[in-house]
Amino acid sequence: MYNLTIRLETEKDYRTVEELTREAFWNVYKPGADEHYYVHQMRKHPDFIPELAFVLELDGKIVGNIMYTKAWLEDENGKRKEIISFGPLCVAPEYQRQKFGKMLIEHSFEVARKMGYDVNINFGNPGNYVSRGFVSCKKKNVSFVVDGNFPTALLVCELVPNTLDGKKWMYIPSTAADCCEDTASVEAFDTTFLPKEKKWMPSQEEFYIYSHSSVVR
Ligand SMILES: CC(C)(COP(=O)(O)OP(=O)(O)OC[C@H]1O[C@@H](n2cnc3c(N)ncnc32)[C@H](O)[C@@H]1OP(=O)(O)O)[C@@H](O)C(=O)NCCC(=O)NCCS
Image 1 (spheres, rainbow, N blue to C red):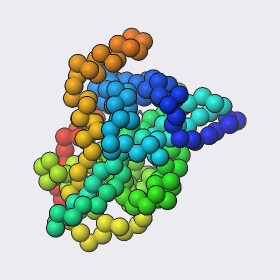
Image 2: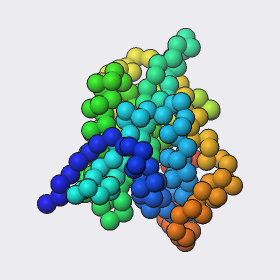
Image 3: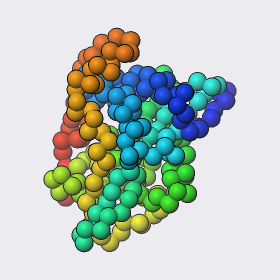
Image 4: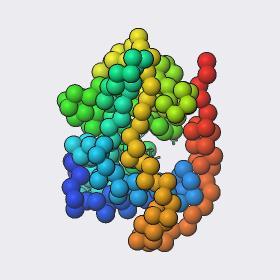
């Protein structure tokens, strides 16, 4: 049996968390990955929420982590409500599908609730989240600010039930992930890690379908 701990990330964990993130995301959503660069940059972004950056340790070894930024919902009168959005969330490949991801989500949601947050929205593979209480953004009338659509991958989880009922909302994400558009910096950062082969995996096509489609009915 493991000695399992979920605790806040400290500065000493930064590189370990970046290595873990790179391992977990490598080739999953595209050949290679940029999430480790995102993690490296997001801690400096004003929308980053350090009180919700958790690592999961098994016998003192970090095998999972979750990080959050602020995001916003705007109603039809232009009034904004601050919410949270997690990502990256990851578990080391050899420890996946053993409920550690679930534990990280549940633990951080509990803390977020105590901080006064009532809604989490994130963009991801529905298969990872629908059993955790996430629903399609269409069901909560939350459209994406960029195009007004209801993306298949845009998933809403109310930390306090029925918070969003009865209104039309627009989702405004943080700009924290924009750093990944600077592909030269992503590549330069990646060279500070051990070489790893970039290749195609079917999960890339699966996520392309989710992230380029919308719920219309
Ligand atoms: C996604 C990830 C964080 C999930 O963590 P995990 O510890 O592996 O997941 P859990 O064991 O808690 O189960 C998560 C859910 O995934 C689904 N799931 C379980 N096994 C699955 C499988 N073989 N294939 C697809 N989905 C599966 C289920 O919905 C499961 O919940 P349930 O069993 O309670 O119904 C982890 O797999 C990971 O790091 N993946 C790579 C990085 C990534 O994609 N991160 C998420 C995007 S930010």
